[in-house]
Figure 1 (cartoon, rainbow, N blue to C red):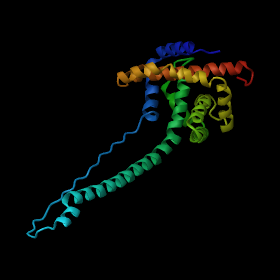
Figure 2 (cartoon, one colour):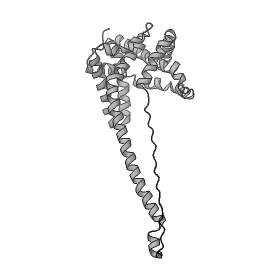
Figure 3 (tube, one colour):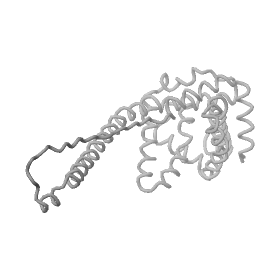
Figure 4 (cartoon, helix red, strand yellow):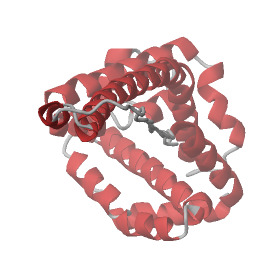
Length: 260
């Protein structure tokens, strides 16, 4: 059985052996796959109302009904709703454009890169891995890697549409898919998803607690404006998750359910 302490100690040791390459691999993955979009919106309107000079005397009842204050309120109200409609359309267009750009990038670039980064940190457990491992999925069974990770994401999304919690559970069930493809890029979709699910069986909650154990580090990372994450936390987390995969793989091999 694996423990959080052992995984973290292994991760620290291996990062120390290959620190700068681990930093580079984690940084590249964080920038390309973990960055957040920037949305800036600014809006406003100005209206100018001028009163024309008139020599005619205004009737009191007419003035009360069509006073300048009432006209200003009506104009402001109409402009406000018009502004909201325009703002809504702009936001929807921006979201649509982002989706049209982000989805193909995620499917064709980021997911294969995730496999490569997973392979880097898996190999880094046994030797000083090379940064070129990040491009592994682009050179080996690229189409199959794209297909498998696409269906992984689709399954997680469909479960998340039911309720948030099932989507989170599925994300942990399929967590090992990039590591599996990093070693067996030709593995079929159903086999890869099933293997990840079997290896994570009984370990999803422990993996969740393992992620929670980094919460204090993330708070410190926020205080350092992300500097701690670049030089230590991101490679530390990536290496720990790779150590989890190695531990679960060894555990699964010893159970006799798969052959080495």
